[in-house]
Length: 311
Figure 1 (cartoon, rainbow, N blue to C red):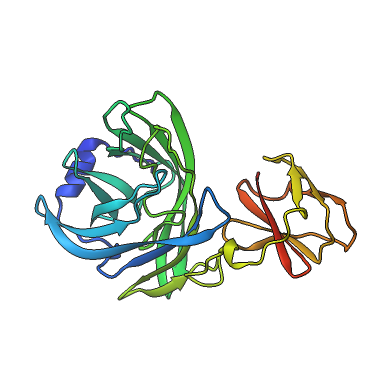
Figure 2 (cartoon, rainbow, N blue to C red):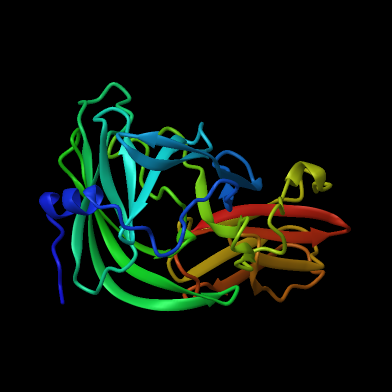
């Protein structure tokens, strides 16, 4: 049955002493995510860790540290409290707990997560993520049956009168499969950089053990183009249109041994047939690729050419 979680309902949930069905963020828990850096071809990783337990307003909380310096991501120290299958985040500015994820939610359930964004000099205040559950399921990992929730989050901002809707998936124990704190640190205020998270690679904690999602070969895989020999400046690659919808044109003026398209996680998504012919114009159908940032990587005489495009 559809439930709309009101402020009063959530306050009552918060006031009870029930325990969470699965411990969320126990001390020692660690999340590893892919990150694609905005101003380079580098692909790396960021980590989030649960470092200690603490008590706030009489409630046991986990102190969780997320990376800072990525303006589009919510970073820094977070205080999490779990109760009745609900994960709360404590806002140190408003000194209030707000429900972030409800793991026993059902399709149609709704609630609000309220947080204080960094202002960047804009209008101060709180922003609101309104969650609507689209569907629910289960997933078995490490012999544990975990609740899985598919939802939409609608961002309403204090500083800007716009709404932004995002589809999310979160899992009991692991949290959001894209990024644990999947909300913009600056709300609707503009972020200067555009580093892009590429999803959860690995999760581990002392009781659950380790789990790898398989989006990359290992938890700490990186791609650093400066470690790869680059092709001479006169041997270039051009591609258009960029961003692209259906057909990508690629102009190369050197013979190629290989040419491949990789997604943000470093996975090969489309090999391209090439030849050793100079000055090739290739027309590639990319209609089947989901929206995202992609790397075009080719090999010529044991040296690498590369370019990025957006779909």
